[in-house]
Image 1 (cartoon, rainbow, N blue to C red):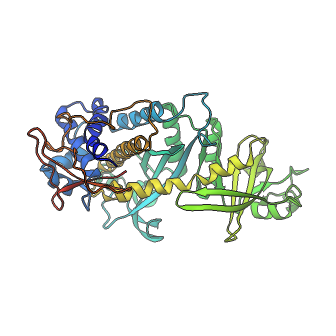
Image 2 (image 1 turned 90 degrees about the vertical axis):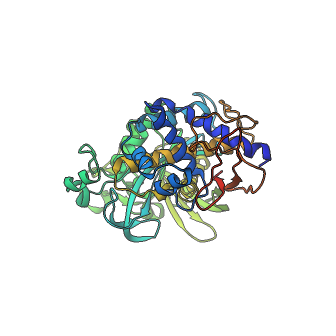
Image 3 (image 1 turned 90 degrees about the horizontal axis):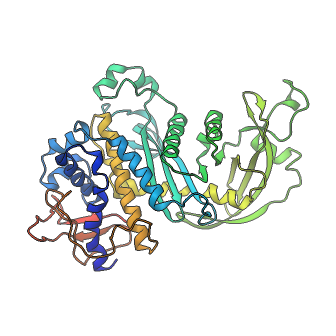
Amino acid sequence: MTEEQIAALGPAFTNFLSSFRKCFPRLPTFKHLGTYCRGLLSDLTRKSVEPIALAAGTAVRTLQEFLTHHAWDHGRMREQIHRRVVRDHLPAPGAGPQGGVGTVGWIDETSVAKKGDKTPGVQRQHCGASGKIDNCIVTVHLAVSHGRFMTMLDSELFLPEGTWDQHRDRCREAHIPDSVIYRPKSTIALEQIQRAVANGVRFDWLTFDEWYGSKPAFLAGLETLGLLYVCEVPKSLPCYPSLPKYRSLQKPFQPKRADSAVIRSKPFRGKKWRKMSLQRKTLGPQVWEVKAEQVHLARDGQPTERTYWLIVARNVQSGELKYFISNAPPRTALATLMKVAFTRAGVEHVFRLAKTEIGFAHFEGRSYKGLIRHMILCQLVMLFVAEQTTQLRGEKSRADNGADGWGLEPAVPTLDGASLQTGPHRASRVGHSVSSETQQGRKRFTPAASSQARIAL
C-alpha cells in the first residue's frame, strides 16, 4: 500500500459507516458505532467491549449498553449489508458468471470456546476450533463469493435444545426472547438463505459440507426456492443408481450407499476416471480423479422422481475420497460442478479473517442481543475490508467511495474524536499497522497497549 492509500482508509471508513446512519434513531448512539467498529479494526490484542472502550476513552458501561440496550435496528443493518453487496459487488441479472461459476453462497458453522455457563448458547459440544468436545457456542453463517470478492452475509446463534431451549428461565437470564427457540442448524441456514434472497441476493450456486448435505429437508427447501447446489455428502448417503422395478423390502430393491453405488452399480461400472486440476484457497492446485452419473436419491424411503448428480472424487496424491451430489441439470459441465464444490474452502478463509483480524471470537457478555449485534458488526467491518481489498486490487466496485484519494475525515462518526488517518509506515499484506496522527485539532487515537491502529485487509 502507498502512503496515500493508507491515509485514505480513515475517510473511507467514515463514509462507509455513514451509509448505515438510518439504523440509528439517535446521533449519540450512531457515534458509538464508529467507536466499536474502529476497535474491531484496531490492533488491540483483545477486541471485546472493555479494551475497545478504554482505548477510545469511552466509558465501558456506555459501550456495553450500546451492544445490549441502546435502541438501534441491527436487523435493518443486516438487510442493508445484503443490499449493498447486491448493489456494488454482485453482477446484474443476466450478466455472465465471473470466474466460470458466478455467485456462490457458502453455508457453514463455526464455534468459539467459552468459559463458564452464562454466554448464550454455551454448552459442552463439538468445538471445531479445538477439534474435540468442549465448552463452546456454535454459530451458523451464510457467506457469499463472486470472483475474488467474498464476505459474510448472515450469522445466527445455534440454541441447544436440552440445555437452553427447555430451560426458559435460563434463556431469560441471558435475555433470549421466548420467540427464539431450538432450531436445527439446517433450518437456521435455510432461513438465512431466504433472508438474503428476499434482499436481492441471487445465488448461482450454493455449497456446504456433508452434514448439511445429509439433510433431505434442507435440500428440498433449497429446491423449493429454485436454487442450485453442489454439496459434499457422507459416503453412506442412500440413493438408487436405477429405479427399482417393484416396491419391496428385499435388498435388491432397496437404496444403495453412495460408496457402494460408485463401485458396483451398472451406471458407474466401467466408467473411466477423469483427471481435473482444482484450486483450493489455502493450498496449491490439486489433481483429482472424478466419476459422475445421474442417480435417484432416497427420500422418505422412496426414490425421487427426478435424478441428481452423484460425483465421487479421488485425490491422486493422497487417495482421499469425497462424495458430492447436485441438483444441477444433467447437461451441466462436470468441471463446473467441481469448481463450485471446491470454492467452499473459501469460507474457512472468511472465518479465519473474522476471528484473527476482526475480533469475531472476542465477544464477552451474557446478552443474546449483544452477541447477535457483535456478529453483525463484525460482518459490517468485514464488508469494509472486502471493499477496500477489491479497490486496492484495482477491481473498482460500481459505487466508488473515494478510498483511493486524499480527503479530510468528517467529524461523525469518530472514535471519541479519533481519526484513522495515518502515516506512511508499517504496511504488510495481511493487516496494516498504521500510526494515527493529530489532524486539524482532532484527538490522537491511542489504544491502551499500542499507539497504532491495525487495519485488516
